[in-house]
Image (cartoon, rainbow, N blue to C red; front, side):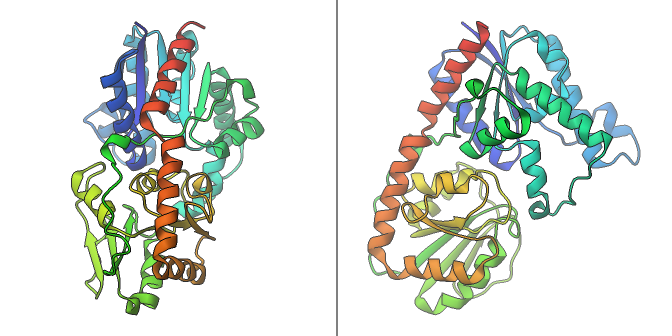
Length: 360
């Protein structure tokens, strides 16, 4: 059996991806996996004892030490990296064995999204050029590249000169068995429930949604926000600060909702939109990055430009007032997820790619 070490970053959206992929591989088999959860937080290492070391630099140094140590001890036949960032930390040592990279964004794409993440634009110069050269070397050296979206695949070719023959779009998957088609309470004449799920309220567009909600609250609408931000109480608003990814209480919120809304200002391919589709919900989101590959405008939901509050109000009002449109789009959303975001099918494709790469 092929031995594989899988290096998995643990940011919020990537953590959900890790849980879904691990659940599939650990139960389905096909490879002998070793899972490495890549954390960049303080862990009692030597780097934590250096005074005045910026968190960003300290995190990179801790991550590099963890990854290089695992690779140095590994007896695996093949490595898997989600994302390319851990691979760049070990760009010299990974050359000795085949490796596969999955990613939701390239470095140059993220640079263009930085303002939406509250970050300063990336400066040019020799350091930036050196980092880019490492990314080029790592991406071109991979046996296979499995971007989450066509948006990322296009950047791999255009920005990094990757051979298109190495690229296969394999989106993140949802465990559809854990997201059954919920018995519909939707369109039964009760109050319309709009659901938002996003830890970072402002970046994910939660403040814009609040502004929009106040414009049509008199239509008998409830807004349910799942976020880590604390908010003052107001009529029709319910805030949840303690929900865990993939948890049953969170799934119940999806089951009870009528519309999902994520008017995000900066994102790549938000997994929560896949979860909304799996729950049979129509979604309202924004025309950025790979979002249109999940929310097909006019088919599985409606899209607006980022920060377009007027457009957000108009599109939400369309869905609020039309239960048949909600039903039709929700059904199409579920079918879209079943075709493109099935964790079992996509997980099996990753296992196959790792087995193929191990023989290269």
